[in-house]
Amino acid sequence: MIEKIRILLGTYGHEPEERMIWRKTHKAMKTARAVTLSGLLALPWVVVMMTACASTTTERLGLPPLQTVSKVDLLRYTGTWFEIASYPQRFQEGCTGTTAIYTLREDGEIGVVNRCRKGSLQGKVDSAEGRARVVDETTNAKLEVTFFWPFWGDYWIIDLGENYEYAVVGHPGRDYLWILSRTPTMDDAVYKGILDRLQVKGYQLDRLRKTQQWTKAPGSVPAGS
Image 1 (tube, one colour):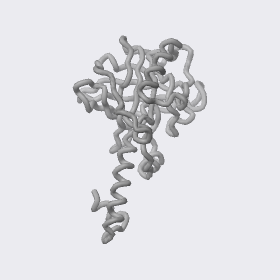
Image 2 (spheres, rainbow, N blue to C red):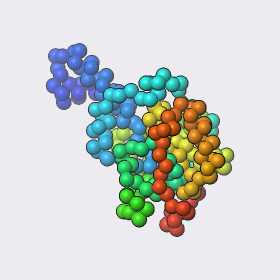
Image 3 (spheres, helix red, strand yellow):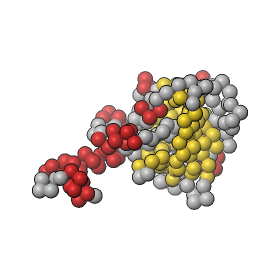
Image 4 (tube, rainbow, N blue to C red):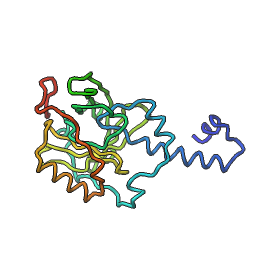
């Protein structure tokens, strides 16, 4: 890998410079792993992330490692999820009515189809297909998702309803967050309980924005599994 970087950037004979480039590239590649759950991964975003070297919220605030739920039944987790709220990201700009549909694949991975309508609930449908894989088989709560090879993003399930009626997806750096529901609306008391637990986990609630959704599930998007 370092030899390829040398060739591309012309750094042969400059060892200190090589080490600096390698450190920045390695850190940027770790940052690029945070692939969106509900948005589209576009090449310009990859370029931005590959050049970014900013520390994560977890690192910057000295927060403890993010904890996931203790166990996830992947079969129960599949189906349709509606995005209730999220940390705004450039790759989801203008998205409304955002949904994610998960299906178990024959190879053991999970198929992912993300959809949203741009600008309004009557806007043009935008969609992306990807896949996810489990990286912690003890809990099934730590996964990786890809929409654009070879980049994989951490997808950690950090809160989950007893009946899989809601889920909260985070990232170890605490810079990405999605609150999901089996229905396009969520009870206020349930939402408040989620926020209270997120605050305990070190998430900054002032960054959270609600997603514009339908008042009931549209006929073309089945709710639940």
